[in-house]
Length: 119
Image 1 (tube, helix red, strand yellow):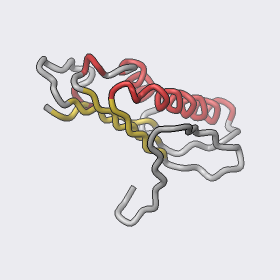
Image 2 (cartoon, helix red, strand yellow):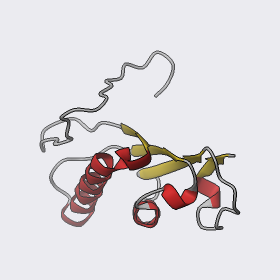
Image 3 (cartoon, helix red, strand yellow):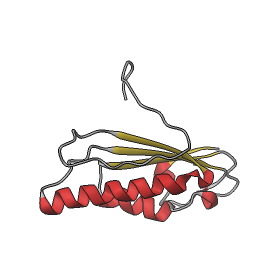
């Protein structure tokens, strides 16, 4: 997003991401904290499937980029972190993630370091 961009925001409740083949591409921003990642991880997996379908078949919905912002107390509490890193590797520039930790006391592993902000 850029200053002045229009965004839709949804907090909690019943939500999903199910674009249809004729829909215009959108950029998706997912913001999660703690175990709140669960429904957003499902959306992220669906987006990866859309990218995979577009790359392998050249058809279907043309997905825009997705940025995930995910916060937890420490890297041990970042659920699905290895899966998320794998998706970023599989779809460079299309799927990005920034992890934020608030109470990290131990060294952050090298694999996560470039993607982690916080204490």
